[in-house]
Image (cartoon, rainbow, N blue to C red):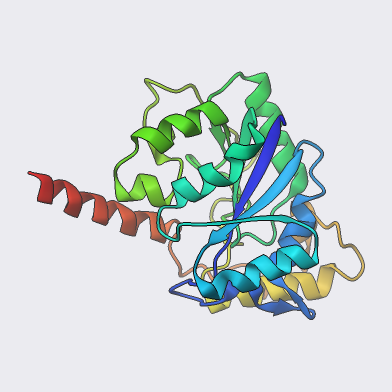
Length: 257
């Protein structure tokens, strides 16, 4: 096993509960994302990593229906969940994806993986200094680096968001940053709020029937034709969940003093 993709997904979203199984054209949003990831030429295996809460049995059942591997583990210690999901396959590289990105672009995933391998990086992403729309996030790391994080990470943000232990240590790990030719980071294509879902639902409704393999360029062209959607959900902040975790870090460190 050379490259494994771990797709994190759960139903217990605080802002939009059950979002990953919300229906778009009579199919769960998560199923569309899995379909897109499977088109990657560089990923050898895809595993959906969900929690062991009873409500997430629905995700496990969906994976069984569409013949995708599913691992169930800790809800809050996502680093443990991702590590345990990947460990049996002994991969060289791990691609981390999240279930709130149903417009993910398999062509972009392949380019980031290629950039990572060619550059001999320990960790590569298009998110640390973002230039792509929020929702086209790709992270790639050597599995051995994830093992270091699994054994050594202690802060809440490091356990919940999986990779901060790695990308916060440029003196220890060789980091790669994959950039777009133009800065589109102001666009929001992730799904955390109802307005986000409405945008994604409209994209699939308009583009999928004629072109199930639509990519980032197709979405941008669609936005040009439907300008009212450009800023429909721009009021929401990027990486809000991670910023909340940093607050939890400070609380923990103050308690330790």
